[in-house]
Image (cartoon, rainbow, N blue to C red):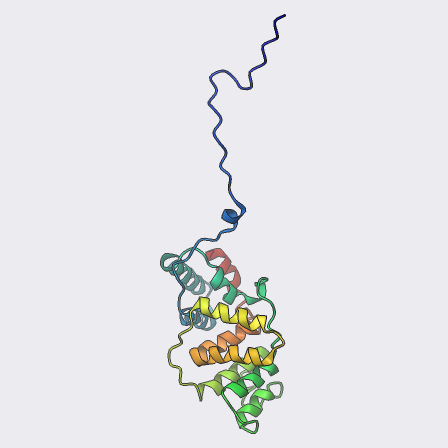
Length: 228
């Protein structure tokens, strides 16, 4: 008895199926590779310009130019930069466990300053600033940064910083890993102090305090997002 002819699995003259390309999970997650890093001082230059510029169109031009230059010179992975620009949004790095007073105590030791030194007293009493300190009507975080910058500027011999953006991110990761270990965190901050200018340290401490985008810098957030 003849068996029925099985139905064709595909239409006549249809192209042969091509083997499917399997994309691994690692390939999906792999970020674009940059060609090295850049000095942190270059990013500080952008921060300073944005802080001093109030015109919306000028700020946009500064941000666009900076990110375009990064893409041309380093690559399309912006993650190392964004971690420093928007520290509050960084969910990968743990908290540091450092507040203004803890940072003041650490800096007093690593500079070092005697506990009776007038600058040490100013740093420890950042919540009770002198009339000279409040003349600019600064918010607490900015007050701490201003005091710290003035104290470090009088004693630091670093004219040009040597930290790259990647190196700073590694030191900040190290600082977070040693949360609650004051001695270890002091060693990490000593590396920062030895390799960065007073102006760079002012911004690094601001990153640690998660105060990069304060009220005065919040308007540039959308400009940064538009440049990505």
